[in-house]
Image 1 (cartoon, helix red, strand yellow):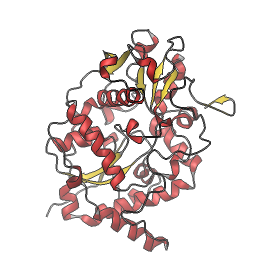
Image 2 (cartoon, one colour; image 1 turned 30 degrees about the vertical axis):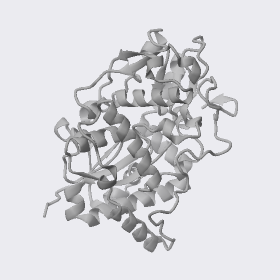
Image 3 (cartoon, helix red, strand yellow; image 1 turned 135 degrees about the horizontal axis):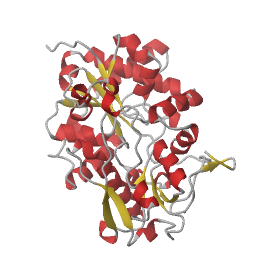
Image 4 (spheres, one colour; image 1 turned 180 degrees about the vertical axis):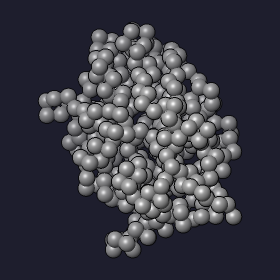
Length: 376
């Protein structure tokens, strides 16, 4: 049996219940002092991408997780979340591009390849985001011209601490070297506002969630398979705290936004722009057939475009038992009914909700979303 000296956690600058559990101090309460790869040196921080650290829990983008699995990493998938993150195609206001159809013939930014498949996630994100936009207008990659732009640094540990670069392609958009760029999240919303870019295609507004399947949609929670096999109680404990944090988030929107400002290194306006509506009520992980199918869409895309070394059996990768047990454990602690496997999640991917701040119809051209007459 494997021996665990320390529990490690790695987080991305995005909304996650596990990140909230860590920030609330609940993971340290559960496990003692939890190591965070973002605070570690490069020899440990690398495991954010290759997942070869036995005691590691990772909730982050699916490109590195799938790439690592395709290259033989011994991991298991224990949960999936789906959080809308302001995925958009931006253009200059004078471009004449006011919707997906006008992207025909456009020069679109595409980050270059990094040193590994896993670290090439910005390229994968841009490529799949553009595909979603084009498909809404019946267009394909053959209808646009990709212009390679610089791949941003992907350091995770102390070497990358405090580094906040420009979203790839925004500099080239401002300079007129490209006509459009895919973006997502709070930092890109702030940077878009700084250069005066406008939204040509709001991918979040499309009713079909497959148009915005990408690195963070859905977002996997993975563990080393030896940790699950030899210490299943640790995995259940982690998921219990994650579910507990998701329950807490549902009633604490402003506090969640405060944590996100720190996590994303963004201001309140950027967070409010990127994370709209009732996002804080949908942080619970599940392994529903719907989310697994959406992950398969992403896996197939990555395989076709060279981001995976081999195919990945998503169904065989998933381990359902820990999350089911965590739900039961939390239900016993709280006295509430357990969310059982196969139940419908509270907010399905793609479910539309009325009255979202900054809501726009698909294909409309709009500046960065506004609320109550003021930019948010």
